[in-house]
Amino acid sequence: MMPYSLLFLLPLAISYVSTPLISKFALKNGIVDRPGAHKTHQIARPIMGGLGIYLATVIGIVVFFPVTPGIASIILGASAVVITGVLDDLYNLKPLVKLAGQLVAAALVILGNTGRFSTIINFFGDSYIAVPTALLLAFWIVLMINAFNLIDGLDGLAAGTAVIILCSMVAVSLVRGNFVLLGYQVMVLGACAGFLPFNLQPAKIFMGDTGSMLLGFLLSVLYLYSITEPFSVSLVLGSAFIFAYPALDVAFAIYRRLRRGGSIFAADQGHIHHLLIRLGFSVRQAVIILYLLSLFFGGVSVL
Image: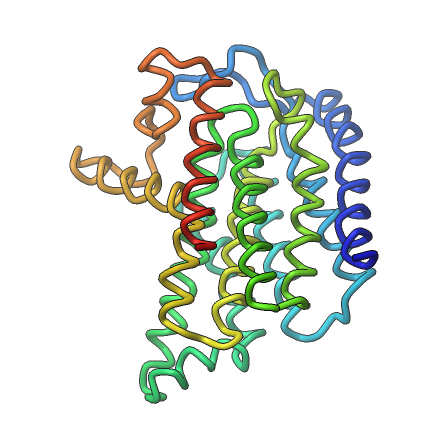
């Protein structure tokens, strides 16, 4: 257990130490998230807290793991997501520009892990579905990037949900005896756990699009890694429950916006956490309810 303790504690320490420094830098330079029509906070808060999670994850990978081409592609993909997120936090990028950055990140991961992901194609036994499979993998990564971007609407919600999902992933890896993948999951878990205390209500810093998109990216890739060792339909269907809450929220958001004839990228106050607030729950109560929902789906997935 000692190596796994280090895998958890080093990213946790890096994230915990770097987050206040990032907060001070953001405040000093006016990089804050101000209250708005679809937001629940009333006071401007520093953003880009996701940089702490990024630093902790990348340093952890370099210190503890061999940087193979596949892992290097994940680092590059995470960097592309973070750069896109930072630019969006600073300049409020247009939705299609953000989507382009997300697609670049997805493409980097898929191209760098063609050998690993070929197990999905080999399972079906038809090389002609290689391109559709690659597109499906890219869709999954982009979907989760945007799902976590959308649920990041209350203090601690996205980061806490990521911690719960990672704990569920760790449990699945322990059950399956996949101890290499377990190491990566524990490392990202430590990075998120180091940030979470600063993000719980009342939040001292927000992760911004920098962090929410990074979490969606990392979790979606860890999931793809988990279902390809080896690939099985039962594993896919069972472990998919881990992502039920963010997946349902983004699916309903797309349906809701299309039904109204608007853009699927247009922000609104129809997300599950907004509905709970309108029902009279406090921010903290709404977050706890959604934590419990994620715990339920995670438990179903493990079972």
